[in-house]
Length: 357
Figure (tube, one colour):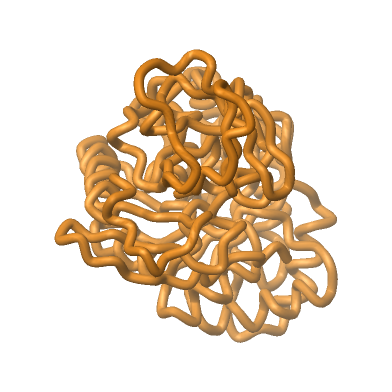
């Protein structure tokens, strides 16, 4: 991706996405999962675009993953027919929205407690369709989820007996490099259910990091990856991709050169986010790889040029930045620019931006 392809009428800071790289990333992930007999259910949190969700399904995905009802509503309205929401749904207003959403698509949700299940059951007991539910399992990430295989099987039985609900299986978002432990946890939960004659249709694994080894969770039937479609600096640093695999770049303009070893860009925390993802600095400057984005203010990015050699940027120059975390950047922009292989630029509204409820 090169900023010389950025037309003069497009103002910075902005997000430009290379569609050819997107397609290559989608194909690579789908081929890997197809090879290992695992279904793909990509997470739309990274791109938040119905256009790319349809592209993923056309490539072979069985459906998509959303984190919030608002995202799922947008995707269902755009014609996506199979949606998994991987978040506990709590509260009367949200549950009523969930019931309405279930009339528009094949919908699955998760739960990790009897209290959450009761709310789902009370809402769907009189609905026209049963709601499919997966038990969320904490396999080491220490976020949501039941803590043991035995708890998972117990909650599965509780769901199976709840009016309006259909137990469908298990879901986890695992920590990195934990395939053996994750597989043992999930396999044990499946075996406990099967010994009680409770059918397990789905075992949903997830994550872009380590995705190319996700087949080691052999009991998984589907995999949820999000960031893989764009990739970002965090995945480059972890060895999960190369810079050439990063489809999303923030384009920013140099607005000040107060000293020889410092430049200021028009991309601060409102653009690049202050999420370091465990890294030093806030992004990779493509044209000046030795530069370091040391500090972010709301509208200012402070870039250290002291390690750079050769020609340095001038005021007015445009640079490209591979962000630490592409998913958060998507949520900061109302629209993005899609650059096609022939140089054509397409403006795309970020339809799921801000859908946090």
